[in-house]
Image (cartoon, rainbow, N blue to C red; front, side):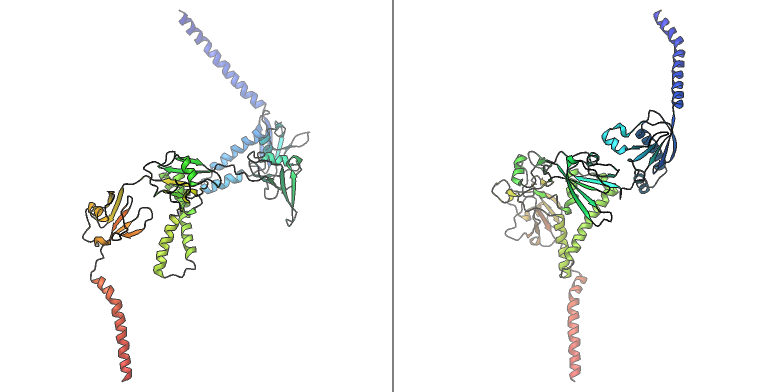
Length: 486
C-alpha cells in the first residue's frame, strides 16, 4: 500500500519539478542575455571589433576567450604543417603589457596581463564594464625590450613598459635562482641611442633601480657546480645503473667501489668506456641511454639526426685527408683506419687493472655522462670464411685454431691452405697468422679461413700482360737503335 502511494506522488509531482527546472534555466539564460555588456578590441590583436562579455569577466578572461576562439578558427583552415607552425608563432606574437583600457567618463587604465600572471595582482586585471575599449600596442621585442639572465630561474626577454624597475625584471624571470649563493649584485648593459657605446652599470639587487628600454641585465653569481654529475654502468656488475660522481675527481676505482664490484662472469678484457664528449659515438650513446626503439626509424627528425652523425664522419675524413700526401693504395687504407677510429674511439683504460688502486688505469677520471659497458664472458670462438659450417664453437683452453676449424666441418675445396688462416683477437681485432708461435686462441676470438684465388686464364693474362708490355717496348726500342746504326 505504501509503495502505491509513493508511486502516485512521484507521477503527480514530476511534471511540476521539470517545469520548475526549465523555468529556472530559461530565467538564467534570460538574465545572462540581459546582463551582457559590449567590449571592443582594437589595436594589434588577433581580431578587432565589439564582442559580448559578462560584467563578471575580468580583462584576462575576456581576452583569452576571444583569442582562443579566433585562433582555433584560423588554424583550423591551415592544412600545411610548416605553414601551421609559422601561423601559430605569428598568432602568439601580441603585446600583453601596456594595454590601454578606455572607459566612458573615466581615466584610461593601463592593463598588464603579463605581470598579472606572475604576480596575481588583480589591480592589473580589473572587471569589465559596458562599452569598455581595449587597445593593444604593437609588440616590438627587437627594440622595445628588457632582457635578463644569469642567476635567475627563467632567463627572459620581455616587453618594456615605462616605469619598469629591477624588481619587475626579476619577477618576470621567476626570481633569483636559489641554487646560487650570495646573489647581491646585477650588471646592466645600456647602449647609447646610436648603439656605438655600451655603459656597464653595477648595482645592488636591493637598490631596485628604474630601468630603461633596451637594458640587458645579468644577475651576477659564481657558477655553481652542485649538479647531478653521474655515469651509467651497464652489464655484469653487482649494482648497475647511474652512479653519482664529482665534477672532475671521481676515478674508475671509485666507480667500481660504488657498483659493488664486478660479477664473476664479467669480461674485463672487453669492458669499455664510452665518453660523453665523443661526438662520433653519439648514435651508440643514445641507444644505450634511451634504449632502442624500432619506430624511431620512421621518425623524420630521428633520421635527420642520424644523417648528421654520418655527415660529420664524412667531414672528419675530408679534413684529415685535405693535405695528405699519400698514394691511392695508402689513401684507401687510411680511410678504413680513420673510419674505424671515428666509430670505435675507446679510452686507454684496461679494466683488468682497475681493481688495483695504485694502477694508472684505476686512477682514470670519469666525466659526467660517461658510460661503462661490462659484457659477460663469452665461452665461444667464431669460425667463418671457407669452412663447412660458419658459426660459434665452444671454447676449450689450450686448443689450437685447427681444432676449431675441424669442429666447423673443415675447410671447403676453395679454401687456402689451413696454415694461411687468421686469428682475429676479440677485443683488439688484431690479426695473427695461426702459424705465429704467439697466436693463442682465446674465448671471444674469431678464426677466418680465406678463400683461394681462382687462377684461370684471365688471372695469368693479367700477370703476363704488364711484363709483355714492358718487353715489347724494350724490343721496339732495340730495333730502332739497330736500324739507326745501319
